[in-house]
Length: 93
Image 1 (cartoon, rainbow, N blue to C red):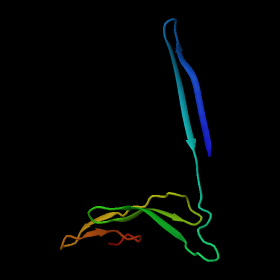
Image 2 (cartoon, rainbow, N blue to C red; image 1 turned 90 degrees about the vertical axis):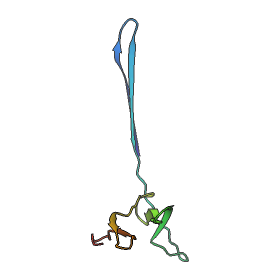
Image 3 (cartoon, helix red, strand yellow; image 1 turned 90 degrees about the horizontal axis):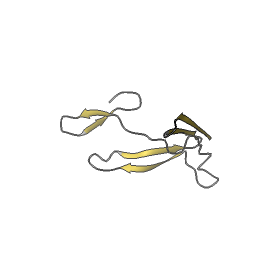
Image 4 (cartoon, helix red, strand yellow; image 1 turned 120 degrees about the vertical axis):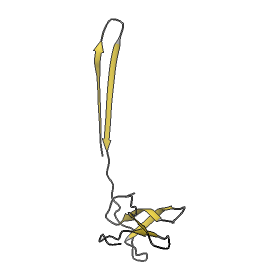
């Protein structure tokens, strides 16, 4: 990752001094692998979204992908009998 901090005096008077700091950072990560000779899996899911509709897990981690990637379902409305509809990956309902 990268971290950057900038500090400086914006204004300096006899009875007043204004200093400002700016800090920024960027970090990235990668899940190398879950699998070994015995345990085989391509991805794991975590953090279930409960409540009405039970939307499933919100975080999905793939081998070779970033850790903690958030996934959500895109709401498409309700069926005639009141069940929730969600868009599929190809955009269909």
